[in-house]
Image 1 (cartoon, rainbow, N blue to C red):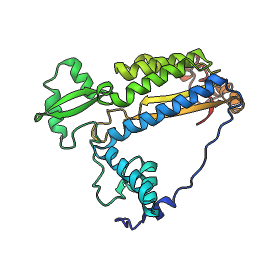
Image 2 (tube, rainbow, N blue to C red):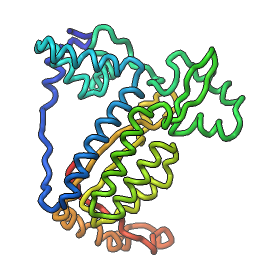
Image 3 (cartoon, rainbow, N blue to C red):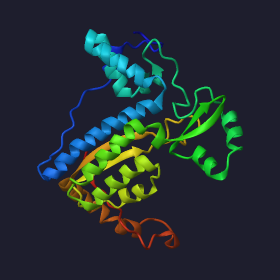
Length: 287
């Protein structure tokens, strides 16, 4: 396929280089290693949830492209699937979201967290009819706006993505029983609970309190809102599992330990200096 930019599938792929990410796992306990396998499975589930969020047609198209690549086996079919997985959808993010599949139109600003036919004016008028609690949900991170019988209604992420989040929650709890660090285990348990309760604050605080000595770390759940091009309100699922690099972290300690010295020598008036500066923990991880 040649698009309006003039780029073929092969030319788009040639802008990227396949790179294998590796990490030293020798310092992990057997339980940590087993937990990594479960967290990888969580990542797959959240990946599927993300495709459901990004566009109504994404899960079906992904299945179709996978079948075509594996059954037909042509180079073009494989390239199309690779690009779809690379860009997490049928739009080239490096070329202003230009579709690279013939049957696909422009990337909807609503994604699939609002009805594609909904206007901002319709949303605002509907929100004005809601009570305070539902109004917060409508503007909040963790609820989808859906069209029902000509009107709009809310559906929590816990309900909308139940098929992905319930097994993910189970795996998170199983991983929590295996990891060696209790603060990381607490985050995993609470985030698993959040997948089912739709209440994320406690698990967010638990993530901030993961010990700097934990061998593992993960950012798992709904975070960034930029895919919501209507209001930048709805959070989209992602998963990043990290193995900490303690040697690399030690190299950064010289910078964090010098922050107070830097603060004292900044060319600013005395009243603007931070006299209670607490150096933030900075860790190096392998993703």
